[in-house]
Length: 292
Image (cartoon, rainbow, N blue to C red; front, side, top):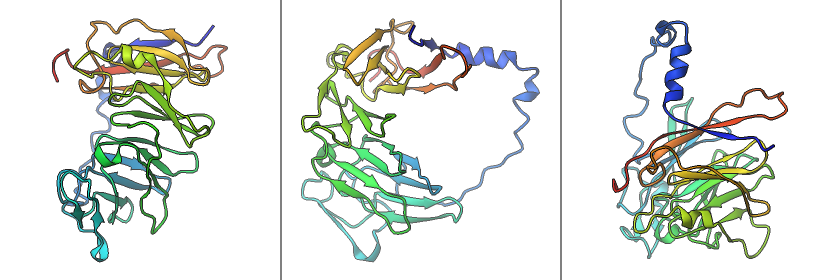
């Protein structure tokens, strides 16, 4: 039998709290304190990713005009297709050194507004798609002292805006969905025609609302993908393009993914020595239909 996923609600957290020996267990670590490390890094951390060298890469959209951080040595980004500034001499990405408490400006060539990405096995950040001039871009950042963003024009066969990426056991990333995209693809490419239809995404796309963007994606213990969009989920065999299982609609039927965004997490696996390991996904939040 296939390992099963269990839909959990916030009640799970209440049950966990109730099982603790006393409330003092929850408050035993309250002696910490906050500290301002930098008054400003000059950009907004719309996206943020920890790298293998314990540095944090942050990046922001380019279509809101200049940031508060200049690019070094008079460098400028020249982009005639940008919707805000065609010549922009400010940074929209930084690399933050946590231990040294220092940051340096980086250069993104195209808009990263509501893009997606993941860390590859070698530690490089692959970041894909977004708005306007970046909708088919693949951006790569390799951790090193002087590295900057490297962009691959037309690295994606489909426009990806509000898509979801997930690393796979074979080292590739799968990129699922996006605005107007009811399909998926892989990077790095292994075939020329690399856009495969996924009807589940069109089935969960409510007309005129688009409340199935940024789907929640998790690798299951059996090698298939758990994909949640809008208010329901499937177990998907991405190797053979087969829906292995359809799950019932979440209780109440309200949307949980973008733009009524909640959040989701694959909880720690239990009983790893059992014959059938059970995986559990917790989905929290969301908003009623029409809240957009």
